[in-house]
Image (cartoon, rainbow, N blue to C red; front, top):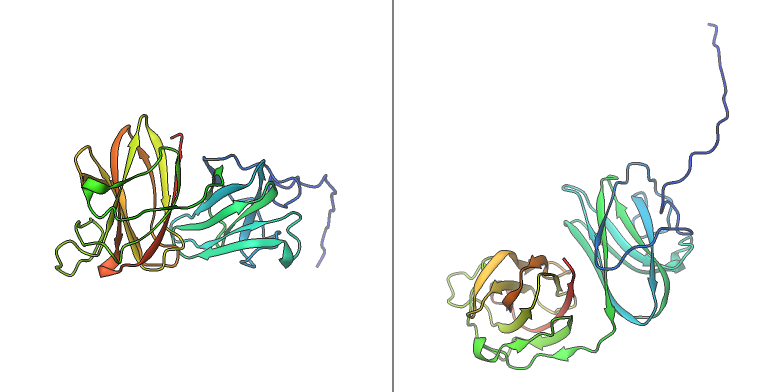
Length: 275
């Protein structure tokens, strides 16, 4: 058999932005960046070996609270990590969240000023969405009582971090995604109020809560209001309840509840940004 072999040398194909940690593109605050991973490989030290990954640079000018979110394509899973450059050693990883659900989230309180790397991974190399919601670091505000509509705790329009406990309140309101087993009012709940002067994107995250949470967003002005489309989230996994909604100007009520009668200590991070 005769074989003809021809060898050509061409310039190296440039790596796509974020293929490696050094020189990774900036991740803008409070928006979701869609990334096609078609040209990417597994090149970054991360928490899911073998998965396709992309890195972004996150620059904080001051101590901040940060919520990192990765959205997966249907049927995919992966992981979300925060690291220091060059993302070459395991010690460079600061936090990691694998997930087999549609999102992976990392909530970081009081993260110091500096340059970090956000690493999004997909096991199948499908497109992902990556977001960094950032605000000035704030102390947690305690939500006391707020058992019913008439004493609902009012959230500041810029959001914040809030803590409470539903053990000492009553079961007053139901929600669209609960399984109440025929019990009137479902689990013990607390009511919060949010007034928006203009359309806003509202992200509510209950990571860190000690029980299986339920979160319901309702449109007023009367309380408890009407549950908005996509506004009910069951927190029956370790990441707890989470909603990401674009809301028109108006009055809203946020119901902190429990899945199938669960109750206890809860945490809520609220980021309110431009839609």
